Amino acid sequence: MIDHVSLLTFMLPEANAFWDQEEVVDLGLTPSDSRTPDALSRLCVSLGALPAELRRFRLGRDQLLTYGTLWFTNETALPFHWDAPPSETLAATARDKLGLVHLAPTSREARTSHLFCLAFDGDVAERVGHFRPCAFDGIDNRRFMVPRDPISTVGTAEWGQTADLSAIGNDGLSLNGAEERVANQIFFNDFHDTEALDFMYLGELSVPHNVPDQRFADRLAAL
Image 1 (cartoon, one colour):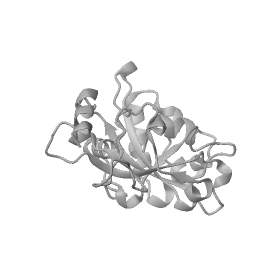
Image 2 (image 1 turned 90 degrees about the horizontal axis):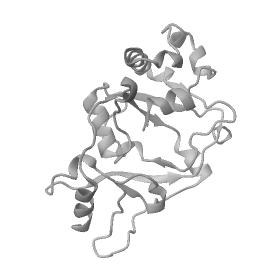
Image 3 (image 1 turned 120 degrees about the horizontal axis):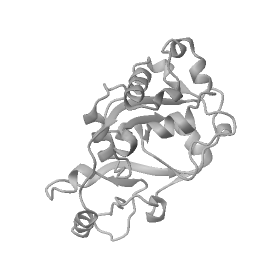
């Protein structure tokens, strides 16, 4: 899951062939039409309303899907159905279930955050290699957690586990979010001719995650 800046600036710049499709051209919009909140909203909503077969693109030559490690989950672990109608609720639910505390709305220069979900063939991750995440892979994510075997003090699951941001403030709710793994850098050449990236628009993120770090630490200590 990424914000609109990552999608429109780094993955879908105006030079990408995605914008040359007739139906996309008919929108009369380009990434540069995102300089104001209203124009950005129109652009994101229009992209999200495209038929699924058009919401696909290839990385430009010499492009990376990520500049570091890539966190991913299985489609069956997503807290929503692909092509679910976008909404502020959907955006917040997806952000929370995937534990993405760093994705937040911002008021700087009246900017807002629109979230998108990317999907790619699992064969791509298999080719570049992937592994169970550890704390060092979390980098600046303050909501990193490791699931544990009920009879062991060492994490043994093949997949990691995100922390559900919406559950941290309630002791009666499980912290378990979605399964996750980490892939190595994915380059343009790691995709074969028949493979592409699919995307869906989740909605505008308007609700920040405000639960303090100490509260999360206390929940982890009680596990």
